[in-house]
Image (cartoon, rainbow, N blue to C red; front, side, top):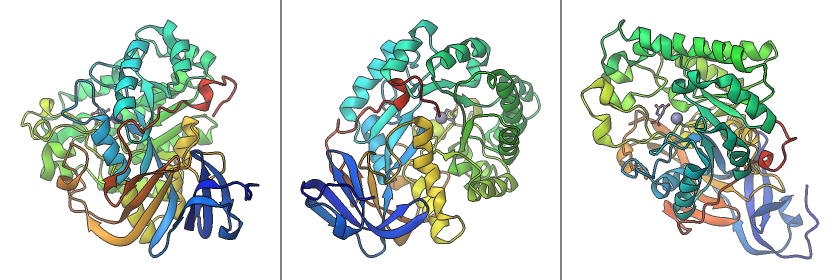
Length: 448
Ligand code: DOR
Ligand code: ZN
């Protein structure tokens, strides 16, 4: 694995116990000009301008990749901005985020993509990419692809806009489609079945809505040869539907979020609007079974759906006025590490939050491999701590995970060979974060 770099001095060599493909072993990683250039025995590493030795209860992980976040900003800086969102990501060992288009204003055109890029470029500390909403003009798709979009995000409100027409264009250009699966007609009908209060959120948006949407969307889109991804799958039933569809040979990928396998809807009794999210939290049985699916790695990715809102908004009394979603970036890795250290999850679960989403998105991140970006997390697992929203770096200082015990924290986060985060402090300037285009934006032949 070692590169032929013995005569040249590289920027950085980090040595210690490294996570590579489900195994932790003593090794060293050389980074030069932002890229990993060699991995191997410490004695075989090239000379380096800077050397770091990772010891004690610390391991070297790849930078985590979160394929579903809402960094807000634009007209919603009161909820989050690219700086506060970056801090939240760094605290959670995340070096790349894929940002959703439901901003104010909605990102559905090239012009708005450029507007968002200008802001993110100025403020981000971490690397990032964008999805775009259903385009206001399909003729802009080619330029959006050249711009480097990660895919088109389809919300339930887009289902009637002509998904086959969109899929046909996406197929031609090799642009992925990312789906929020919840059937709006079932949700509409359900409005008369239960009183509109947050404790009934899971009844007002039942599992059935997710399952029917999956069936309809697969029926509609699987004939197109464009990549399809179902995001934030909430229930065991829906997950089973997807696993069975894969067995039948259907091609797509899917993710779930930690809140769907750690938490359940009973939290809405205690935490009210704080626990409101779309799709809703499900039963404790569903969470346990979904956790088993993650355990067996029968899933393609884990994302957080980091969806910050102002606390006042989440504490509203009127069900319809409480926005859905909560922050997740800074706790996902510590939650996974807790299950890994307690031997309830295999180590490979880390791939679901690093190499797997990177592969789906087609970006050069998420693994300790020569040629990829030098994104490393030095994770200190010596401490157990309890999650408290008030300590978050996100502007959204609350969480339905309040009080839950987790294991460890990123001690140092390195992005493209630079120390971006150390002992709870950001070490790079705003604007350090780089816009990342997927491989497919410059090579239309490459498929997932
Ligand atoms: O809970 C959610 N929050 N679900 C979504 O689909 C959107 C998100 C948000 O933007 O707040
Ligand atoms: Zn979302």
